[in-house]
Length: 144
Ligand code: HEM
Image 1: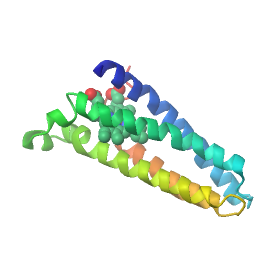
Image 2: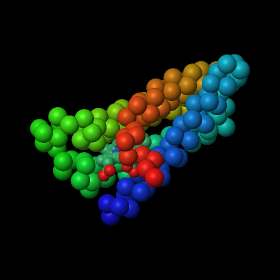
Image 3: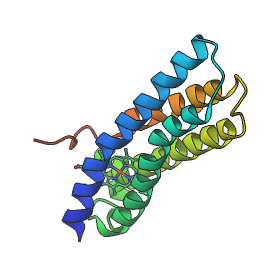
């Protein structure tokens, strides 16, 4: 169970990053091209939203299964920067990132047919992507 979840969480990270990158770049192109945000553009934004949501669910389960997650919580572990990353910083930052991405998508969804949707995706997905990048455990991912 643990190994399967860890592999899923690891491989899903490629999809999360790819989906967010495609959505973000496409939003920037739409924004600077002063285009109208269409239903097709909304679907492109889903490429960023769906993998991030799936990853969130896998991560949450992993948190209670992994020896590096909740079961490792102690004062001593919080004093160690790598342990603290897995116990607190990574999960918390990723939850904030996924919430921001969800807000960006929900706002943009209501802006189909206007020129404002791209800005919502660019800002919220941009910040979300940045948060994900600064708190991915680069010490263990992508591994070898
Ligand atoms: C977009 C969201 C997320 C991304 C991109 C992400 C990415 C990653 C990556 C790349 C790793 C390292 C995997 C490896 O060593 O092979 C990892 C580990 C981990 N993640 Fe996430 N994660 C996300 C969300 C979450 C959430 C929401 C939680 C918990 C609530 C979580 C809990 C964990 C735990 C406990 C580990 C350590 C697993 C272990 O090595 O035993 N992740 N994550």
